[in-house]
Image 1 (tube, one colour):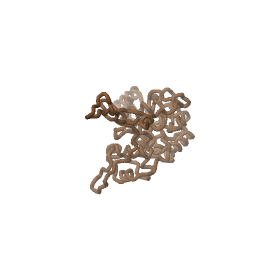
Image 2: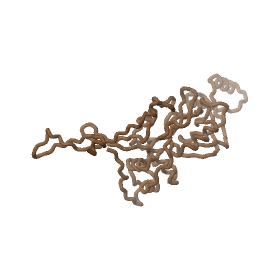
Image 3: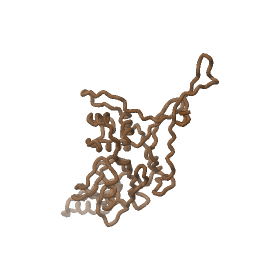
Image 4: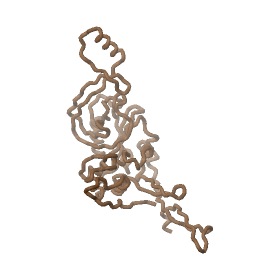
Length: 332
């Protein structure tokens, strides 16, 4: 049975720091289309009613695999957290999580959720960054439209861009980036430096460190003109950076794009867009033009109803059983 119930009423108390439970926040985000799901109940074993979700539009199987890897009840689910960030941005609120994902939100954000009526003005988007097969690429999916953009990209050297999914929490058309870039060095170079130092040679002090199982020497960088920046994992972001070529690891951890691609992507996405970085696409990712994405969306609303079991009923009692029927059957 399709469920579109309003959020559970809550009394706001100045003495309380928590108004909404995580399930109530999910309901609000779904009702206002920030989270593009349709909640549905189904009949499980022993007559127990369970809740599941269906997408409002056709999604690639790589996204299905991603969604299945995290429970919707997980307060840190990146797709749900991304929906919250987009809600906060649309309502001019600080883009922040709660103490535990969507739990423990600041009271002003919970109040805004309770009274919200404005639906998501933007289409739902998802970024998939694939490292293999080469070249490295960025793919942009938009709900109801399929894959709408693709470009070569660069991830971080020495696995500096980990695999995972994070929602975009900060954006800027222009910013400065300061940090340290890891330069790999060989064991032979380190041994030669240590030997010369032990022999008493006057050498400039060099500090070598271990970084993702590599010996490195850090080089400071200060880039004052980084354009079309979308932060998703701490200091990592999707942005423009000028390179001679694209399609292989070159960055300090960000996802770098050519200028025209970065500008286009920035205009198509929004706060909360999930960014998935993957060694390879998670299962069939159904690229543009695939037959799978052209198939019609097969949503079959289920209605739970009680049916009389005549064989077990008597003149003194009626035996009822909870069964699933389609909505069309339920209307007959």
